[in-house]
Image (cartoon, rainbow, N blue to C red):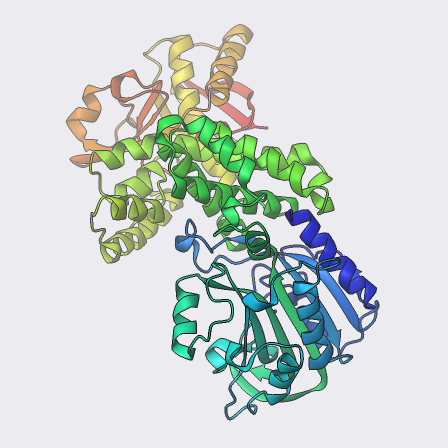
Length: 584
Ligand code: GLY
C-alpha cells in the first residue's frame, strides 16, 4: 500500500467515526515560543487538550507535518528523519481508552478499511505504574478483549510509557503498538527482556502510540489531573509505509524510492547510501520549512534550515553529484507534497529561489573552505577567513579521525569577536560606523571601486581616505582632474560585473612583505604589523582583482551586494577627488 493511501485511509477511518479532519498546521508553531517546530500532531492542539473548546468539536484527526532536529547526527540510519508526517486522532474530553484502543486495533488490522496487518505479529505495551498513576489494568483488559495474548502485553515504566510534549502541559500514560517486521515470532512467547532486545534490533518496530492525557506537567513534574480526560494518538506515516511495503526503512518505500534513483543516477561511482539518505532527508525538510515561511538565517528556525541545506550540500559534494541535484530534488518534493500541503503551491518560484540562493552562497564558501581544510588550516582561520562553519570542520575532522580542539576554537572566536567590534568602531581603515549588513556590503563595494578606478584611470590612483555609513560609501583618491561621464560609467560597469560574477571574498593572513609583494593596497601613511590581514576578491594573491590590507568585515561573496551606483564625483582638495556611491 502506497503512502498516500495509508494517509487517506487513516483520515477516512476517523472521519467515519465522527472526527473532524484538520489540515496540517504550519511547521512553525503559531502561539508557542517554547519550541521552534511542531514535533507532534498534538502540538497545535495543546490549548484544547488543556480545556479550551475546539470550534470543530471534541473529536479531531489530522496528518501533521513535524520536524525533530534533536538528533541530526543520527540521520542516515534506518529510523531517523528530521521531517515526518504524523497521523493522529484526538478526543477532547470525549471517548477514552476503550474506543481509542479498539479503533487503533481495528485500523491496523482491518483489511477493507484499515491496513490489514496480521494481528499475530502485533505486540503492545502499557504503563507499569508509579507514584503519579497506577498500573494501567484498564488498557490491558481492553487489549485482552481484542484477542492480544497476555504474553504479548508488556508493562513498562514512565521512561517508555509516559508521554508528554515537554516539561509543561498535558501528559499521561500511554499504550504503544509494535509490529514484528520479520514474521518469525508468530505464535511464540517472547520474554520481557527479549522483547526489549528485539526492539533494539529493529525486529519489532513501534508503529502507533495511544496517549491517555488526563494529567498535567509543570516544570517537569506531574502536578495532578486535568479537568478532562483526553486521547492523543500518533502514528508516523514513514514507519507505517515501511511496514506496509515490507521494507526495513522508510528510505526504501515509495516516499523516497525515486528520490534515491535520481541521486544514484547523478552520482555515478561515488554513490553511497548514507550521504544519499542525508541529502534526501534534509532537502525534504528544507523544502517543507521554506513552504511554511522559514528563511535561512543565523538564528532560530532560520538557522536550523541553513544547517540542513548546508549539510545536504556537503554530502552532495561527497558523492560528486554536483549541487544542482539538490534543486532537482527540491522540485520533486514540491510536486509530491503540494497535493497534500497547500503552501507549496503558493509562490513556488520564490520558494525555489530561497533554496537555490542559500545553496549557491554556501557552495562558494565551501569551495574555498574545503581546499583550505585539506591543507590542514586551523579551524579558526577556516571560520573567520572562509566562513566555514565549525560544525562542518568538526564533521570532516571526525571522518578523518582528526581531533578538533573546540575549547581553543571558542576562545579564539570570542577574542576575534571583541576585535572585530573595535574594528567596526573605526580602528581599522574605512572607519566603519557599525557592522550591520549594509555597511559591510558597502565596505566590500569600496574595495571593488578602488580597483575599478585603478583599472580605468591608471594604477597611480591611490586611496587617501574613506568613510562608510549605512547609506553610502565615500572614497577620496589621488587624481588631478574631474572624471568624464564615460569614465564614471565604465567604473560602475566594472564594479557591477564583479558583483554579478559572484566572486568569493577571501581573507588571508600573511607576512607584511608578502602582502606588499603581491601588490596589496595599503592606506597611505598607516603603520602595519609584521603579520597582516589581506582581503582578496576575484582570484588569488597577485592575480586577485582586488587586494587590500584590511581588518574587515566583508561579505562572503560579491553576489550579496546588489547594484552599484556612483552618486557624485567632486573635488575634495587639491589633487584629491571624492566619490560617493551607493548599493541599490
Ligand atoms: N503524541 C503522541 C506521540 O507523539 O507519540
